[in-house]
Structures are given as structure tokens and as C-alpha cells.
Amino acid sequence: MSIRSSLLAALVCATACPAWAQTPPLRTGVDGTFAPHAFQKLGGGLDGFNVELFTEVARRMGREITIDATSFSGLVPGLMSGRYDFIAAPTTVTKERAESMLFTAGYLWTAFQFGIKKGTAPLSGWDDLKGKAVAVNKGTPYETMSKAQGEKIGFAVQVYDTQPDAIQAVMSGRAYATLGGNTVIKYAASKNPGFVADLTLADTKAHWAAPLRKDEAALQHQIQDALDCMKADGSLAKLSEKWFGVMPAADDLERVVTPGYGVPGMPGYDPTPHALACKS
Image (tube, rainbow, N blue to C red; front, side, top):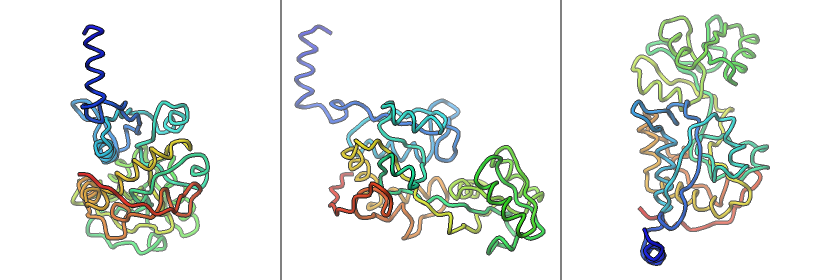
């Protein structure tokens, strides 16, 4: 293309091109091994709940998006160094994290949940596991909590290299239950009719939200507005049902639009009300 043609194209684009052609793509990353949130497709590329979610968020913002698959441990350093504009991987909002980063409002609850074999008695609490065995993924908070409870109540803890291996232990009868993240447990139950998502530990409930750098309040508002519009029109709930096999309840974060920007009660939360201007 000649210099004259390039200048003409730039002039036309400044007045007539769509928004995505005038602004650079959003840059973000996910843990590409964390199904069903993000994982590699057989034919190449990424798939998963968070991949679909933030691709749609970018579309509603009039932006393209590039999503890297990397280890979770590299995401926050990548954000802080400017490599990423925000983090699309599910990130638990804690006081410590909220002191150093901005967060959108939560879009999913995260919590510890048991999974059991279909046909076995549901759990009402830890005491129901006395004399039984719980299967957990090695090196996770689920292992730590189960071992502490097992010593106190009297049940065995079986440790496996992956969550699917822990689920298989339940299906084969080696363990009575497995403890894992609620979205992973629900996803496994939606794919295996012999496996049931059971008791959720309410005291482990926390927000999953998108973190940004402290100086990106404008971008925080834009991303949260898109998420809130997806809550308001029901598309976030439908996406959740697609990936986790359960339609969210009225008080789940896929439906609840919280006031202000950020997570209520956390550092950096701005309670100022704002009106949504949603576009499909």
C-alpha cells in the first residue's frame, strides 16, 4: 500500500471504521489447563466458560481480544508489567489482592463443594464422613481442609494428582466423596450421569472477578458494565448453564447486579450508583 493510500485509509477509518478497528485489542490471559474455565481445543485455540465470557465482553465493548494461555502464577506479574490489560482467568477476590489491584464486580461465586456417586446418601456436613474416605487433588486448599477435618472427625483422605483422578476414586467406590471447586464439580456432574454435585461449604464462598491495575478505573467500568448487562439480559446465566449444567439461582452472581464498581466490602470498592446503557 502506498503512503498516500495509507493516509487515505487512516482518514476514512477515523470517521467510518468500527470501534474495534480504531482501538487495539484487549490483552488478557487464562490458565489454559483449568477446564471448564479455559482449556485447549483439539483443533487448536482455547475454549471454556471464561474464554466465551470475555470474548463476549470485548464484543460488547466494541473491542477485539487476544487471550494467552499460561500458568496462573504468571498472570498477576503479566498484568502488573503491562503485558495484560486485565486477567480473564477466574480470580478469587481477597482483601490482600484488592489492596493492590482493582476488581470488577463478581461474576461467579466460588466455593468448596463435595461430589458423590449417584445413589449414595447426600452429605449434610463434615460429620457424615466419619469412617469414610474423601478424595482430593494434591497440593490444593481442598487437601489442606480435608486433612484437618479428617484428623478431627475420623475419616481418611486420599490424595490424587488431578481432580479427574479424585472423581474416578469416588466412581469406583474407593472414596465416598471428593472435595473440589464448585464449578469443576458441577461441570464433572454435567458430563457424568453417575456423579452428583452435593454439599457446598457456605463458609468458603467468595467472589470470582476480573482484576486490573489500580490506574485502569475507566477500563474497569467498561468491563463491569458489559458484565452487568450480560447479567441483566440473562446471557451470563445461560452461559453458566451451558458450561456447568445448572441454571443459576436468583441470588447467584451470574444474575445479581451489585451497586457501584468493584466488590462490596473490599478495598477499592466504589459504591457510587450508575445507570447501565446496555447494547446487544
